[in-house]
Length: 508
Image (cartoon, rainbow, N blue to C red; front, side, top):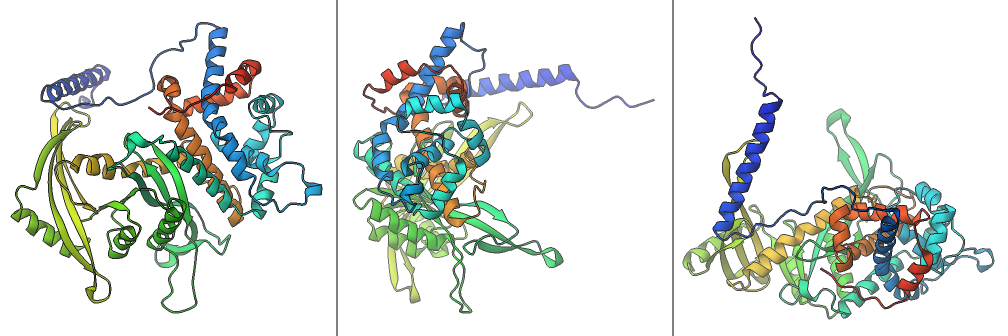
């Protein structure tokens, strides 16, 4: 006789799922009763299409295109003015498309999330698509071939494209669009590095090199690495600010090393200071950066910082922190944040010595956050307790009044830059796609992608698009807009009339 099966059948699986949902609901109600603020996860609405007629769908499509493109159109004068300053090295007698037209075309490729050069050439050259785009952007003339944009990027200074992005962000800052998201009156800037692409062959001398595998299977791999700076606001909004490409540099000496993320940090910090000399900034950094030169650089620029302190980093600081926090029992605070109970302890005015023979010193402040929460175990109904520990170095003295702002709303939201990388790599921007094996062109496409992502992020957090995005999601909205532009849905006369009226961007 065969043994009875141990796997649950369909009815038992359904019963387990229902029991788990009941347990989760009971836990939420219990936590709410104890004063915890349980935030709901934002998900796409699960319902059938709300449109009851073709006319209603057409109106909704036109409204979505209008609101999505208003953000882009509102900055078009600044965009055109800044892009027109880029020197055009082409022969004027052989030039068919203006430099500004080609670059705006390149930005729209990423705003509308075209997956490759060939897809952009095929889709954007469709008569209906291009005629609809021309009605929104009157400066567009004949549709260019994507290879024309590549040839242009080979010749121009692509850093000027990034300068255009910085100019747009500077104007939004000047108009105080981000005022409600500041941390201690400072703009939070997160910096982190990520790999852009890797190949088994050396396709440009600037590529970094590493060895993968071991023994007989080891081989050289060549890759592109970028250090990125983003405005990382509370609530999840992350806006690309500036990029620094790491390059292979070697002076021929025995001790020479190729570029690294820490070296790139100092270059990127200098560029940010040059672009925003008077801007109050708080830098949010991960566990790679707690060292003297980084802190010295921030102090020199009068920047605040919150840096992750790992257990194996700065052993002397760990020792002083433990000693001081034992002597200062009043430096404790317990509070609730979301569904978590947090216990903070901190120590101010710790002297950290660095440099040759420890001749240089920095006064730092350290805070530890121990948090606990309860959740339903995976695949079951039992309530389990979880805990986590976070440790940061702060440039400013800590007290119970600024802990929440600096730690929870500032340092904790450093993760938004990592989320931005995931979005650019897997949600339509083709971050890891090598549009060209020419180094200058590759960088140019990167800067165009950053501009496209920036415009989509600003549209994502605009008040007018909040309801549409709740129904469709941001990728669904972009697909909705792209399908509308590619079809006869668009009411050009109505759209032109609406775009002529003044527009003010309001963020949620």
